[in-house]
Length: 218
Image (cartoon, rainbow, N blue to C red; front, side, top):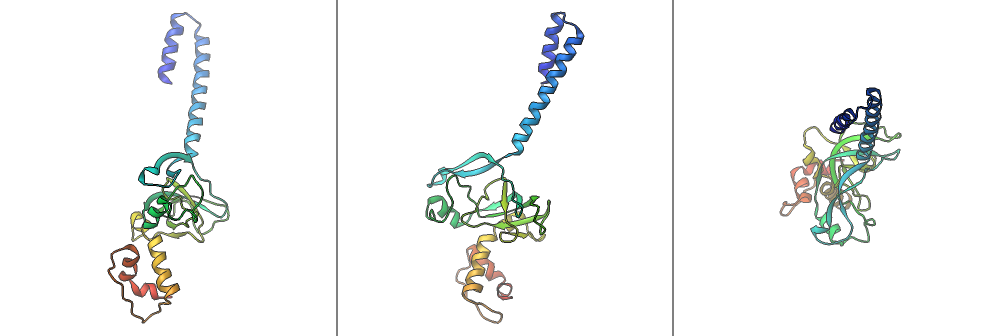
């Protein structure tokens, strides 16, 4: 814009147009430039980068696109994603193995994220802007492979402990929920019982094998 104003000023000077008219034209162009910049800024603020699926298949169906930035509802928070993890279920979703359980296309995959609260809905009291959190989404929800994602604080979000990184927190949701459901909800594990975990190589195995007492404690 500055280069354009200088060039126009030089052309007008060569044409010997009055300085007053030149000033008026420059002011008008400056206002138009500021308006364009504001519009572009507002447009950028309403958009975000996200990994989007328009069909099931191999890794080639995952495409980085510009999509509308979600606006949290009154009972939701908007998370600025710092880290997201990939679980075996995410691969199954991409291949279409769980097509009957997930939403319609386009789909933004990603069930586990960690990040910082960007905005909180009017009914949210548990979290506020700037709080570090991690979240685990349902098959119908997802949306973690994006710059921002909306989440329900009462059922999908927890405060990130200061002792773990965002990357570590993002790896806990799906694996931790699966381990807890298997041992506590299904096996009815209680304090004093012994658990045999074979292998202990995957996320679901590692979490309870590191701290079985915490898993069993009510």
